[in-house]
Image 1 (cartoon, rainbow, N blue to C red):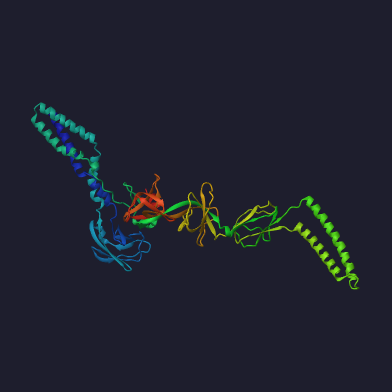
Image 2: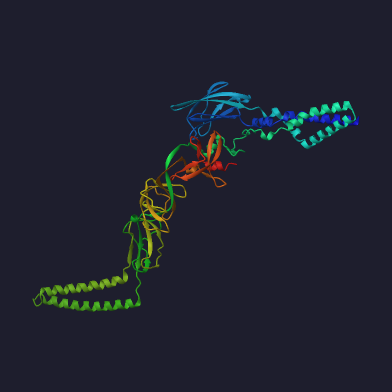
Length: 544
């Protein structure tokens, strides 16, 4: 009898526990509750537009973008067929379109029809917006499910094993009534264990509904970015196309001045530097050809001073003798005692001696002027007053900043290339034209010269390293995308983000090759006709 009472109590516990899991099977109700906490949202797209509607209380926010580029569309007219009748969405500059929607308080499927008009483009976009139930409707059921989940399966298994042993013992003792009761208990508990024995691992789990307008990475690796966040990130896309492109070779290079528009200012003889009127030119100062940039005063040794003084004495003596001779000739010339030619020769001799004497004085005092060879700016210079400049030393380097070249190094002969580009480390692109290549190797490579085209050369300086892309005759098929679309993943692979849905982006690993200064060629990992993110891809990769 005591065993029968114990079996009856165990049956009551199992039956109570059995009632809970029947309602707690699967995550459907819990998932519905999680979805119910999210705002109702829907999306629809056409060849021209992509539209996302998000419920915000009793107002429906409408995000309208261009399908191909993901660029926000402003100034459009959006007419909406709602359960309350036709109405027009209100345009809010810089934000989503707004539509009063009192019918959002009623759960269920709401059919909507959006008519978008923008200039000559008109499109009809039907959508079914599902308004979820309130969270409080399933509170009691959720508590029951959590109660069942708190009971360990090991405890339930032990109780079931004890019942089986009881059945065996009672069968041996021929207690038919107790055995029948225990059998009924086992049969009643059987659905419980049969239910728990299902292989839930093989059942696919539905993705959780978004619970907020915050960008985040989903369990499958895709990135959920609501339209509001896409406007902040300024995400832009393109539709990929497959084509045949000319292969591009990338060469290392550096910026050099144009040989015909630059020059060095050097001292022909050694001497002491002195500034011109106004001082030495500073770095970056614009100068014109012929401007005096500095003076060099050659030093005079003691022996040189002695020689110069000796020559000065000799010249002074000769001048004195010639002047006295000239004076006599001038006094005798009027009487005809001296020929006119002798008088002129004497005057010429005096003038020549005086000129030699003056040149000797100037050679001691007059410095050498250092003159700018070309017009441009002072790119380099270290002149200091009193500094001793050695012969052939470079005092200033003058460069025309609007005439720059690029010297690239190639390991093979580059033909007369057309359509070459140069890209700086900051990503700025310059068109360049081929000027020639060297015949002799330089460190096992061939120097190739290109001239930078255009007038906007801001940001470039002599000696700056750049990457040179030269198109060749070889052709390769593939998909051309901007370099900004590539993102380097943590494992070192190059990835791109595909815009698969209005608010979902999926990363793809790709194999690329350089194409030109702005694009790369995708040869594997991407198909044509896909929307690829070309702007703010780095921000998507940082979403967690």
